[in-house]
Length: 526
Image (cartoon, rainbow, N blue to C red; front, side, top):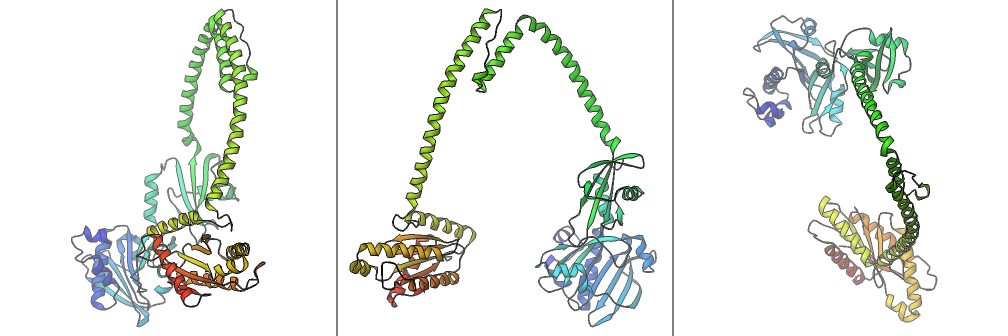
Protein backbone atom coordinates (compact mmCIF):
# COMPACT_ATOMS: atom_id res chain seq x y z
CA UNK A 1 0.00 0.00 0.00
CA UNK A 2 2.93 2.33 0.71
CA UNK A 3 4.21 1.59 -2.80
CA UNK A 4 0.81 2.37 -4.32
CA UNK A 5 0.60 5.70 -2.48
CA UNK A 6 4.11 6.73 -3.58
CA UNK A 7 3.56 5.88 -7.25
CA UNK A 8 -0.04 6.95 -7.76
CA UNK A 9 -1.32 10.31 -8.93
CA UNK A 10 -4.92 9.31 -8.21
CA UNK A 11 -4.67 7.98 -4.63
CA UNK A 12 -4.96 11.31 -2.81
CA UNK A 13 -4.57 9.77 0.64
CA UNK A 14 -1.67 8.84 2.87
CA UNK A 15 -1.23 5.22 3.95
CA UNK A 16 -2.39 6.07 7.49
CA UNK A 17 -5.50 7.79 6.10
CA UNK A 18 -6.28 4.74 3.93
CA UNK A 19 -6.01 2.35 6.88
CA UNK A 20 -8.18 4.68 8.97
CA UNK A 21 -10.86 4.81 6.25
CA UNK A 22 -10.87 1.02 5.80
CA UNK A 23 -11.32 0.57 9.56
CA UNK A 24 -14.64 2.49 9.56
CA UNK A 25 -18.09 1.32 8.45
CA UNK A 26 -20.18 4.49 8.01
CA UNK A 27 -21.46 5.41 4.55
CA UNK A 28 -19.04 8.26 3.86
CA UNK A 29 -16.00 6.16 4.62
CA UNK A 30 -17.36 3.21 2.64
CA UNK A 31 -17.68 5.50 -0.38
CA UNK A 32 -13.98 6.29 0.06
CA UNK A 33 -13.34 2.56 0.44
CA UNK A 34 -14.93 1.97 -2.93
CA UNK A 35 -12.84 4.70 -4.54
CA UNK A 36 -9.58 3.42 -3.04
CA UNK A 37 -10.30 -0.27 -3.76
CA UNK A 38 -11.16 0.33 -7.43
CA UNK A 39 -8.00 2.40 -7.93
CA UNK A 40 -5.83 -0.31 -6.36
CA UNK A 41 -7.49 -3.07 -8.42
CA UNK A 42 -7.03 -0.98 -11.57
CA UNK A 43 -3.30 -0.73 -10.95
CA UNK A 44 -2.72 -4.30 -9.69
CA UNK A 45 -4.02 -6.41 -12.57
CA UNK A 46 -3.39 -9.69 -10.72
CA UNK A 47 -5.61 -8.77 -7.73
CA UNK A 48 -9.08 -10.24 -8.19
CA UNK A 49 -10.72 -8.56 -5.17
CA UNK A 50 -10.15 -6.44 -2.07
CA UNK A 51 -12.39 -6.83 0.95
CA UNK A 52 -12.71 -5.96 4.64
CA UNK A 53 -14.32 -8.17 7.27
CA UNK A 54 -15.49 -6.52 10.49
CA UNK A 55 -15.84 -7.98 13.97
CA UNK A 56 -19.64 -7.52 14.01
CA UNK A 57 -20.07 -9.55 10.78
CA UNK A 58 -20.11 -6.58 8.41
CA UNK A 59 -18.41 -7.16 5.09
CA UNK A 60 -17.29 -4.85 2.26
CA UNK A 61 -15.80 -6.31 -0.97
CA UNK A 62 -14.94 -4.88 -4.39
CA UNK A 63 -14.36 -7.43 -7.20
CA UNK A 64 -12.77 -6.77 -10.58
CA UNK A 65 -15.17 -8.51 -13.01
CA UNK A 66 -12.54 -8.50 -15.77
CA UNK A 67 -10.27 -10.83 -13.79
CA UNK A 68 -12.30 -13.94 -14.70
CA UNK A 69 -14.71 -14.36 -17.62
CA UNK A 70 -17.09 -16.49 -15.54
CA UNK A 71 -17.70 -13.69 -13.01
CA UNK A 72 -19.93 -11.64 -15.28
CA UNK A 73 -21.99 -14.71 -16.11
CA UNK A 74 -22.32 -15.71 -12.43
CA UNK A 75 -23.56 -12.22 -11.44
CA UNK A 76 -25.66 -11.54 -14.58
CA UNK A 77 -23.42 -8.60 -15.44
CA UNK A 78 -23.37 -6.90 -18.84
CA UNK A 79 -20.31 -6.39 -21.02
CA UNK A 80 -20.09 -2.78 -19.79
CA UNK A 81 -20.02 -3.77 -16.10
CA UNK A 82 -16.53 -3.74 -14.58
CA UNK A 83 -16.92 -3.61 -10.79
CA UNK A 84 -18.97 -5.67 -8.33
CA UNK A 85 -19.59 -4.39 -4.81
CA UNK A 86 -20.82 -6.75 -2.07
CA UNK A 87 -21.95 -5.20 1.26
CA UNK A 88 -23.17 -6.89 4.43
CA UNK A 89 -24.34 -4.72 7.33
CA UNK A 90 -23.64 -6.11 10.79
CA UNK A 91 -26.99 -4.66 11.97
CA UNK A 92 -28.85 -6.66 9.29
CA UNK A 93 -26.66 -9.74 8.87
CA UNK A 94 -29.33 -11.81 7.05
CA UNK A 95 -29.19 -9.60 3.94
CA UNK A 96 -26.45 -8.62 1.52
CA UNK A 97 -26.34 -5.98 -1.21
CA UNK A 98 -24.88 -6.89 -4.61
CA UNK A 99 -24.23 -3.77 -6.76
CA UNK A 100 -22.79 -3.58 -10.28
CA UNK A 101 -20.82 -0.60 -11.64
CA UNK A 102 -19.46 0.30 -15.05
CA UNK A 103 -15.92 1.47 -15.79
CA UNK A 104 -16.82 5.06 -14.78
CA UNK A 105 -18.14 3.88 -11.39
CA UNK A 106 -21.75 4.48 -12.36
CA UNK A 107 -24.20 2.09 -10.70
CA UNK A 108 -25.91 -0.14 -13.27
CA UNK A 109 -27.90 -2.52 -11.09
CA UNK A 110 -28.52 -3.45 -7.46
CA UNK A 111 -30.12 -6.44 -5.75
CA UNK A 112 -30.58 -7.48 -2.12
CA UNK A 113 -30.20 -11.21 -1.41
CA UNK A 114 -30.50 -13.58 1.53
CA UNK A 115 -27.11 -13.90 3.24
CA UNK A 116 -25.43 -16.87 4.91
CA UNK A 117 -21.87 -15.57 4.59
CA UNK A 118 -20.08 -14.80 7.87
CA UNK A 119 -16.66 -13.18 7.29
CA UNK A 120 -15.55 -13.86 10.85
CA UNK A 121 -15.72 -17.62 10.18
CA UNK A 122 -13.53 -17.49 7.07
CA UNK A 123 -9.95 -18.86 7.25
CA UNK A 124 -8.41 -15.54 6.16
CA UNK A 125 -10.19 -13.70 9.01
CA UNK A 126 -9.37 -16.28 11.71
CA UNK A 127 -5.71 -16.55 10.62
CA UNK A 128 -5.25 -12.76 10.57
CA UNK A 129 -6.84 -12.30 14.03
CA UNK A 130 -4.55 -14.98 15.54
CA UNK A 131 -1.38 -13.71 13.82
CA UNK A 132 -0.56 -10.98 16.38
CA UNK A 133 -1.03 -8.11 13.91
CA UNK A 134 1.19 -9.68 11.23
CA UNK A 135 0.29 -10.17 7.58
CA UNK A 136 -0.80 -13.72 6.67
CA UNK A 137 -1.24 -15.78 3.51
CA UNK A 138 -3.82 -18.56 3.34
CA UNK A 139 -3.18 -21.92 1.69
CA UNK A 140 -4.79 -22.32 -1.77
CA UNK A 141 -8.57 -22.76 -1.50
CA UNK A 142 -11.65 -22.61 -3.73
CA UNK A 143 -13.34 -19.21 -3.77
CA UNK A 144 -16.98 -19.12 -2.79
CA UNK A 145 -18.14 -16.85 -5.64
CA UNK A 146 -16.21 -18.26 -8.66
CA UNK A 147 -15.07 -21.70 -9.80
CA UNK A 148 -11.36 -21.00 -9.26
CA UNK A 149 -8.65 -21.55 -6.69
CA UNK A 150 -6.71 -18.75 -5.11
CA UNK A 151 -4.88 -17.32 -2.12
CA UNK A 152 -5.83 -14.54 0.25
CA UNK A 153 -3.39 -12.12 1.88
CA UNK A 154 -4.81 -10.54 5.05
CA UNK A 155 -3.89 -8.28 7.96
CA UNK A 156 -5.72 -7.14 11.07
CA UNK A 157 -6.10 -3.35 11.25
CA UNK A 158 -4.21 -2.20 14.37
CA UNK A 159 -5.78 -4.61 16.84
CA UNK A 160 -9.34 -3.59 15.86
CA UNK A 161 -10.42 -7.16 14.94
CA UNK A 162 -11.25 -5.76 11.50
CA UNK A 163 -9.34 -7.49 8.69
CA UNK A 164 -8.44 -6.13 5.24
CA UNK A 165 -7.63 -8.71 2.52
CA UNK A 166 -6.54 -9.11 -1.09
CA UNK A 167 -7.60 -12.13 -3.19
CA UNK A 168 -5.07 -13.50 -5.69
CA UNK A 169 -6.08 -16.07 -8.30
CA UNK A 170 -3.84 -19.10 -8.49
CA UNK A 171 -3.97 -18.84 -12.29
CA UNK A 172 -1.41 -16.04 -11.98
CA UNK A 173 0.98 -18.42 -10.26
CA UNK A 174 0.74 -20.69 -13.27
CA UNK A 175 2.23 -17.91 -15.36
CA UNK A 176 5.17 -17.66 -12.95
CA UNK A 177 5.90 -21.38 -13.36
CA UNK A 178 5.48 -21.21 -17.11
CA UNK A 179 8.01 -18.38 -17.35
CA UNK A 180 10.60 -20.40 -15.45
CA UNK A 181 10.15 -23.86 -16.98
CA UNK A 182 11.04 -25.26 -20.39
CA UNK A 183 7.54 -26.42 -21.30
CA UNK A 184 8.82 -28.51 -24.18
CA UNK A 185 10.69 -30.79 -21.75
CA UNK A 186 8.82 -30.49 -18.43
CA UNK A 187 5.21 -30.90 -17.28
CA UNK A 188 4.07 -29.95 -13.78
CA UNK A 189 0.84 -30.55 -11.83
CA UNK A 190 -0.60 -29.88 -8.36
CA UNK A 191 -2.74 -32.56 -6.71
CA UNK A 192 -4.19 -33.45 -3.32
CA UNK A 193 -3.44 -36.54 -1.26
CA UNK A 194 -6.61 -38.21 -2.54
CA UNK A 195 -5.08 -37.77 -6.03
CA UNK A 196 -7.68 -35.32 -7.26
CA UNK A 197 -5.96 -32.77 -9.51
CA UNK A 198 -6.05 -29.11 -8.42
CA UNK A 199 -4.78 -27.93 -11.80
CA UNK A 200 -2.18 -28.56 -14.46
CA UNK A 201 0.45 -25.83 -14.37
CA UNK A 202 1.92 -26.46 -17.81
CA UNK A 203 -0.14 -28.68 -20.10
CA UNK A 204 -3.66 -30.02 -19.72
CA UNK A 205 -3.37 -33.67 -20.69
CA UNK A 206 -3.81 -37.15 -19.23
CA UNK A 207 -0.17 -37.65 -18.21
CA UNK A 208 -0.90 -37.37 -14.47
CA UNK A 209 -3.84 -39.79 -14.65
CA UNK A 210 -1.72 -42.32 -16.58
CA UNK A 211 0.95 -42.02 -13.89
CA UNK A 212 -1.60 -42.66 -11.10
CA UNK A 213 -2.88 -45.78 -12.88
CA UNK A 214 0.58 -47.37 -13.00
CA UNK A 215 2.00 -46.12 -9.65
CA UNK A 216 0.16 -46.52 -6.36
CA UNK A 217 2.98 -45.73 -3.91
CA UNK A 218 4.15 -42.10 -4.13
CA UNK A 219 6.87 -42.09 -1.43
CA UNK A 220 9.40 -43.71 -3.76
CA UNK A 221 9.22 -40.59 -5.95
CA UNK A 222 10.42 -38.17 -3.22
CA UNK A 223 13.73 -38.53 -5.06
CA UNK A 224 13.81 -38.37 -8.86
CA UNK A 225 13.12 -41.72 -10.59
CA UNK A 226 13.11 -42.75 -14.25
CA UNK A 227 9.90 -44.59 -15.17
CA UNK A 228 8.03 -45.66 -18.30
CA UNK A 229 4.55 -44.23 -18.91
CA UNK A 230 2.66 -45.52 -21.96
CA UNK A 231 5.91 -46.51 -23.68
CA UNK A 232 7.71 -43.20 -23.00
CA UNK A 233 10.42 -42.57 -20.40
CA UNK A 234 10.06 -39.74 -17.87
CA UNK A 235 12.12 -38.46 -14.95
CA UNK A 236 9.52 -38.04 -12.16
CA UNK A 237 9.78 -36.33 -8.78
CA UNK A 238 7.10 -35.46 -6.20
CA UNK A 239 7.44 -32.78 -3.50
CA UNK A 240 5.00 -32.09 -0.68
CA UNK A 241 3.93 -28.46 -0.32
CA UNK A 242 4.22 -26.72 3.06
CA UNK A 243 0.51 -26.47 3.79
CA UNK A 244 -0.48 -27.19 7.43
CA UNK A 245 -4.18 -27.64 6.59
CA UNK A 246 -4.23 -29.80 3.44
CA UNK A 247 -1.86 -32.46 2.13
CA UNK A 248 -0.97 -31.15 -1.32
CA UNK A 249 1.80 -32.19 -3.68
CA UNK A 250 3.58 -30.88 -6.76
CA UNK A 251 4.79 -33.38 -9.37
CA UNK A 252 7.31 -32.86 -12.18
CA UNK A 253 7.52 -34.94 -15.39
CA UNK A 254 10.67 -34.41 -17.47
CA UNK A 255 11.01 -36.03 -20.91
CA UNK A 256 13.94 -38.39 -20.38
CA UNK A 257 15.30 -38.32 -23.93
CA UNK A 258 15.10 -34.53 -24.27
CA UNK A 259 16.70 -33.95 -20.88
CA UNK A 260 19.51 -36.44 -21.39
CA UNK A 261 20.26 -35.56 -25.04
CA UNK A 262 22.64 -32.61 -24.33
CA UNK A 263 24.57 -34.70 -21.81
CA UNK A 264 25.02 -37.58 -24.27
CA UNK A 265 26.49 -35.18 -26.83
CA UNK A 266 28.87 -33.59 -24.32
CA UNK A 267 29.90 -36.97 -22.91
CA UNK A 268 30.69 -38.31 -26.37
CA UNK A 269 32.88 -35.30 -27.12
CA UNK A 270 34.76 -35.68 -23.83
CA UNK A 271 35.32 -39.41 -24.34
CA UNK A 272 36.54 -38.87 -27.89
CA UNK A 273 38.99 -36.21 -26.73
CA UNK A 274 40.28 -38.46 -23.95
CA UNK A 275 40.80 -41.38 -26.35
CA UNK A 276 42.87 -39.24 -28.72
CA UNK A 277 44.97 -37.83 -25.85
CA UNK A 278 45.53 -41.31 -24.42
CA UNK A 279 46.70 -42.68 -27.75
CA UNK A 280 49.24 -39.87 -28.11
CA UNK A 281 50.44 -40.28 -24.52
CA UNK A 282 50.85 -44.04 -24.91
CA UNK A 283 53.09 -43.56 -27.94
CA UNK A 284 55.21 -41.00 -26.08
CA UNK A 285 55.48 -43.18 -22.96
CA UNK A 286 56.57 -46.25 -24.95
CA UNK A 287 59.23 -44.22 -26.69
CA UNK A 288 60.74 -42.48 -23.64
CA UNK A 289 60.46 -45.50 -21.33
CA UNK A 290 62.93 -47.39 -23.49
CA UNK A 291 65.60 -44.79 -22.86
CA UNK A 292 65.41 -43.23 -19.36
CA UNK A 293 61.87 -42.65 -18.17
CA UNK A 294 61.28 -46.12 -16.72
CA UNK A 295 64.05 -46.06 -14.07
CA UNK A 296 63.45 -42.41 -13.22
CA UNK A 297 59.73 -43.09 -12.86
CA UNK A 298 60.51 -45.91 -10.42
CA UNK A 299 62.80 -43.58 -8.52
CA UNK A 300 60.05 -40.99 -8.29
CA UNK A 301 57.65 -43.62 -6.94
CA UNK A 302 60.18 -44.54 -4.23
CA UNK A 303 60.63 -40.86 -3.32
CA UNK A 304 56.85 -40.57 -2.85
CA UNK A 305 57.07 -43.36 -0.28
CA UNK A 306 59.44 -41.14 1.73
CA UNK A 307 56.93 -38.29 1.49
CA UNK A 308 54.16 -40.66 2.66
CA UNK A 309 56.42 -41.99 5.47
CA UNK A 310 56.36 -45.55 4.12
CA UNK A 311 60.03 -46.06 4.92
CA UNK A 312 59.84 -49.84 5.24
CA UNK A 313 58.50 -50.27 1.68
CA UNK A 314 61.28 -48.40 -0.14
CA UNK A 315 63.06 -50.55 -2.75
CA UNK A 316 66.35 -50.11 -4.55
CA UNK A 317 66.03 -49.10 -8.21
CA UNK A 318 68.35 -51.10 -10.50
CA UNK A 319 69.37 -49.17 -13.58
CA UNK A 320 72.06 -49.19 -16.20
CA UNK A 321 72.42 -45.47 -15.54
CA UNK A 322 75.05 -44.99 -12.80
CA UNK A 323 73.59 -41.74 -11.47
CA UNK A 324 70.16 -43.35 -10.95
CA UNK A 325 71.70 -46.23 -8.97
CA UNK A 326 73.68 -43.83 -6.71
CA UNK A 327 70.54 -41.75 -6.10
CA UNK A 328 68.55 -44.86 -5.26
CA UNK A 329 71.09 -45.93 -2.60
CA UNK A 330 70.99 -42.44 -1.12
CA UNK A 331 67.18 -42.65 -0.84
CA UNK A 332 67.49 -45.92 1.08
CA UNK A 333 70.00 -44.54 3.58
CA UNK A 334 68.08 -41.29 4.01
CA UNK A 335 64.74 -43.01 4.58
CA UNK A 336 66.19 -45.25 7.25
CA UNK A 337 67.75 -42.34 9.11
CA UNK A 338 64.60 -40.19 8.89
CA UNK A 339 62.40 -43.05 10.07
CA UNK A 340 64.47 -43.70 13.20
CA UNK A 341 64.72 -40.03 14.08
CA UNK A 342 61.01 -39.42 13.47
CA UNK A 343 59.92 -42.29 15.67
CA UNK A 344 62.03 -41.02 18.54
CA UNK A 345 60.83 -37.45 18.07
CA UNK A 346 57.15 -38.35 17.87
CA UNK A 347 57.33 -40.37 21.07
CA UNK A 348 58.93 -37.46 22.92
CA UNK A 349 56.43 -34.93 21.55
CA UNK A 350 53.47 -37.13 22.46
CA UNK A 351 54.74 -37.60 26.01
CA UNK A 352 55.48 -33.89 26.48
CA UNK A 353 52.09 -32.94 25.06
CA UNK A 354 50.24 -35.19 27.49
CA UNK A 355 52.19 -33.80 30.42
CA UNK A 356 51.61 -30.22 29.31
CA UNK A 357 47.85 -30.74 28.86
CA UNK A 358 47.55 -32.22 32.35
CA UNK A 359 49.48 -29.33 33.86
CA UNK A 360 47.39 -26.78 31.98
CA UNK A 361 44.15 -28.39 33.18
CA UNK A 362 45.39 -28.42 36.76
CA UNK A 363 46.57 -24.81 36.59
CA UNK A 364 43.31 -23.62 35.07
CA UNK A 365 41.24 -25.43 37.71
CA UNK A 366 43.42 -24.03 40.50
CA UNK A 367 43.20 -20.51 39.06
CA UNK A 368 39.38 -20.40 39.28
CA UNK A 369 38.75 -22.58 42.36
CA UNK A 370 38.67 -21.66 46.03
CA UNK A 371 40.97 -24.13 47.82
CA UNK A 372 38.91 -24.48 51.00
CA UNK A 373 35.34 -24.79 49.69
CA UNK A 374 35.97 -26.13 46.19
CA UNK A 375 33.71 -23.39 44.79
CA UNK A 376 34.66 -20.84 42.14
CA UNK A 377 36.92 -18.06 43.41
CA UNK A 378 36.85 -14.29 42.85
CA UNK A 379 38.65 -14.58 39.49
CA UNK A 380 35.96 -16.81 38.02
CA UNK A 381 33.13 -14.76 39.55
CA UNK A 382 34.54 -11.54 38.06
CA UNK A 383 34.58 -13.17 34.62
CA UNK A 384 30.98 -14.46 34.97
CA UNK A 385 29.80 -11.04 36.15
CA UNK A 386 31.50 -9.32 33.21
CA UNK A 387 29.92 -11.77 30.73
CA UNK A 388 26.44 -11.23 32.16
CA UNK A 389 26.95 -7.45 32.20
CA UNK A 390 28.00 -7.49 28.52
CA UNK A 391 24.86 -9.47 27.60
CA UNK A 392 22.74 -7.08 29.63
CA UNK A 393 24.16 -4.00 27.89
CA UNK A 394 23.82 -5.53 24.42
CA UNK A 395 20.46 -7.33 24.64
CA UNK A 396 18.92 -5.65 27.73
CA UNK A 397 18.87 -8.96 29.58
CA UNK A 398 18.18 -8.64 33.31
CA UNK A 399 20.41 -10.62 35.65
CA UNK A 400 20.64 -10.64 39.43
CA UNK A 401 23.27 -11.25 42.09
CA UNK A 402 22.90 -12.61 45.63
CA UNK A 403 25.54 -11.83 48.27
CA UNK A 404 25.48 -14.14 51.30
CA UNK A 405 27.22 -13.50 54.62
CA UNK A 406 27.39 -16.05 57.48
CA UNK A 407 26.07 -14.34 60.63
CA UNK A 408 28.54 -14.00 63.55
CA UNK A 409 31.12 -16.17 61.82
CA UNK A 410 33.92 -14.57 63.87
CA UNK A 411 32.35 -15.94 67.07
CA UNK A 412 32.45 -19.45 65.61
CA UNK A 413 36.18 -19.10 65.00
CA UNK A 414 36.81 -17.46 68.40
CA UNK A 415 34.73 -19.91 70.45
CA UNK A 416 35.25 -23.19 68.59
CA UNK A 417 38.47 -22.73 66.66
CA UNK A 418 39.36 -22.19 63.03
CA UNK A 419 38.98 -25.88 62.14
CA UNK A 420 35.28 -25.79 63.08
CA UNK A 421 34.99 -22.49 61.22
CA UNK A 422 36.47 -24.09 58.11
CA UNK A 423 34.04 -27.02 58.45
CA UNK A 424 31.12 -24.58 58.63
CA UNK A 425 32.35 -22.76 55.51
CA UNK A 426 32.67 -26.01 53.57
CA UNK A 427 29.24 -27.29 54.65
CA UNK A 428 27.59 -23.95 53.83
CA UNK A 429 29.24 -24.08 50.38
CA UNK A 430 27.92 -27.61 49.82
CA UNK A 431 24.36 -26.69 50.90
CA UNK A 432 24.27 -23.57 48.71
CA UNK A 433 25.62 -25.47 45.71
CA UNK A 434 22.90 -28.13 46.03
CA UNK A 435 20.06 -25.59 46.24
CA UNK A 436 20.87 -23.13 43.45
CA UNK A 437 19.66 -23.64 39.88
CA UNK A 438 21.72 -25.28 37.16
CA UNK A 439 22.08 -21.96 35.32
CA UNK A 440 23.34 -20.08 38.41
CA UNK A 441 27.03 -19.62 39.28
CA UNK A 442 28.11 -19.89 42.94
CA UNK A 443 31.47 -18.84 44.32
CA UNK A 444 33.28 -17.70 47.43
CA UNK A 445 33.41 -13.91 47.33
CA UNK A 446 35.82 -13.64 50.26
CA UNK A 447 36.03 -14.64 53.93
CA UNK A 448 32.60 -15.83 55.00
CA UNK A 449 30.86 -14.22 52.01
CA UNK A 450 29.46 -16.10 49.02
CA UNK A 451 28.11 -14.76 45.71
CA UNK A 452 25.46 -16.25 43.41
CA UNK A 453 25.12 -14.90 39.84
CA UNK A 454 21.65 -15.54 38.38
CA UNK A 455 21.55 -14.95 34.59
CA UNK A 456 18.34 -13.65 32.95
CA UNK A 457 16.66 -13.45 36.35
CA UNK A 458 14.42 -10.66 37.66
CA UNK A 459 14.84 -9.56 41.25
CA UNK A 460 11.56 -11.24 42.31
CA UNK A 461 12.88 -14.64 41.24
CA UNK A 462 16.27 -13.91 42.78
CA UNK A 463 14.54 -13.00 46.05
CA UNK A 464 12.67 -16.34 46.07
CA UNK A 465 15.97 -18.18 45.60
CA UNK A 466 17.59 -16.12 48.38
CA UNK A 467 14.74 -16.95 50.79
CA UNK A 468 15.12 -20.62 49.94
CA UNK A 469 18.87 -20.53 50.68
CA UNK A 470 18.22 -18.71 53.96
CA UNK A 471 15.81 -21.46 55.06
CA UNK A 472 17.96 -24.47 54.15
CA UNK A 473 20.99 -23.03 55.99
CA UNK A 474 18.95 -22.15 59.08
CA UNK A 475 17.53 -25.67 59.47
CA UNK A 476 20.68 -27.60 58.59
CA UNK A 477 22.44 -29.60 61.36
CA UNK A 478 26.16 -29.05 60.99
CA UNK A 479 28.53 -31.94 61.63
CA UNK A 480 31.11 -30.26 63.89
CA UNK A 481 29.20 -27.17 65.03
CA UNK A 482 26.33 -27.79 67.41
CA UNK A 483 24.52 -24.45 67.14
CA UNK A 484 22.33 -23.24 64.29
CA UNK A 485 23.95 -21.18 61.54
CA UNK A 486 22.09 -18.31 59.87
CA UNK A 487 22.90 -16.09 56.94
CA UNK A 488 22.14 -12.52 55.90
CA UNK A 489 21.42 -12.04 52.22
CA UNK A 490 21.46 -9.04 49.88
CA UNK A 491 19.82 -9.18 46.42
CA UNK A 492 20.23 -6.75 43.51
CA UNK A 493 19.45 -6.75 39.78
CA UNK A 494 21.01 -4.80 36.95
CA UNK A 495 19.17 -1.65 35.89
CA UNK A 496 19.24 0.75 32.96
CA UNK A 497 21.59 3.11 34.81
CA UNK A 498 24.11 0.38 35.71
CA UNK A 499 27.13 0.66 33.45
CA UNK A 500 29.25 -2.04 35.10
CA UNK A 501 28.80 -5.02 37.38
CA UNK A 502 30.52 -3.05 40.17
CA UNK A 503 27.32 -0.98 40.42
CA UNK A 504 25.24 -4.13 40.92
CA UNK A 505 27.68 -5.54 43.52
CA UNK A 506 27.54 -2.21 45.34
CA UNK A 507 23.72 -2.37 45.35
CA UNK A 508 23.77 -5.94 46.66
CA UNK A 509 26.23 -4.91 49.39
CA UNK A 510 23.85 -2.10 50.36
CA UNK A 511 21.00 -4.60 50.65
CA UNK A 512 23.25 -6.97 52.69
CA UNK A 513 24.20 -4.16 55.04
CA UNK A 514 20.50 -3.39 55.58
CA UNK A 515 19.84 -7.11 56.31
CA UNK A 516 22.52 -7.06 59.00
CA UNK A 517 21.29 -3.78 60.41
CA UNK A 518 17.71 -5.09 60.60
CA UNK A 519 18.75 -8.02 62.80
CA UNK A 520 20.46 -10.53 60.43
CA UNK A 521 19.03 -13.93 59.38
CA UNK A 522 16.99 -12.20 56.67
CA UNK A 523 16.86 -11.31 52.98
CA UNK A 524 16.85 -7.72 51.74
CA UNK A 525 16.43 -6.55 48.14
CA UNK A 526 18.00 -3.36 46.81
